[in-house]
Amino acid sequence: MSTDIPNDGISLRFKYGPHTIFLFVDRVASFDAISTQLLAVLRERYPRGLLQGDPSLPGNTAVPPAGQACHIVYGLPRNPRDLVAGWRAVNVEGENPTTLKLRQNAVLAFALETDSDPKPEFRVEIPTFDEEEP
Image (cartoon, rainbow, N blue to C red; front, side, top):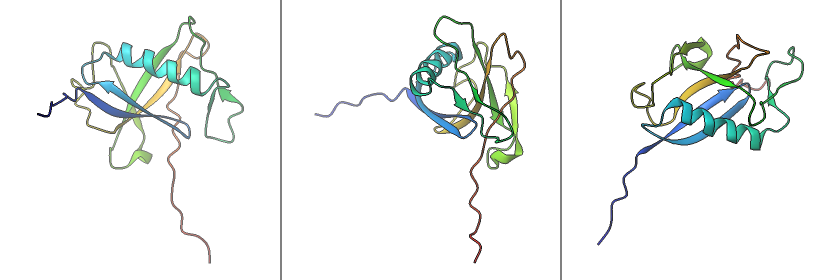
């Protein structure tokens, strides 16, 4: 007899610069919990910071160490079919993926809001497939 395992999770794609972080999260997890999970992954995977993607911007964006105050700001695409159209900030306080009606593999931009950068921007680099020159 087979046992059905409930699938209460959802895969989300979080973008910053050229980075895309795939996280499997609980559909009803608060964004505070998701932010904690995302920060843990960023600290482990990018100890030297996140690439900004824009060559004109010097250096990397530092990921604050554990214990340092950091708030993650999230953005949803203005047009989900055209990520180049930009991002709109979304208030995730008291929200979860279900209340925001996020679907499997939804894309969210994120920015790290710290004391030194109180107004972060969504810096997302979208890959393009240009035809090769003959």
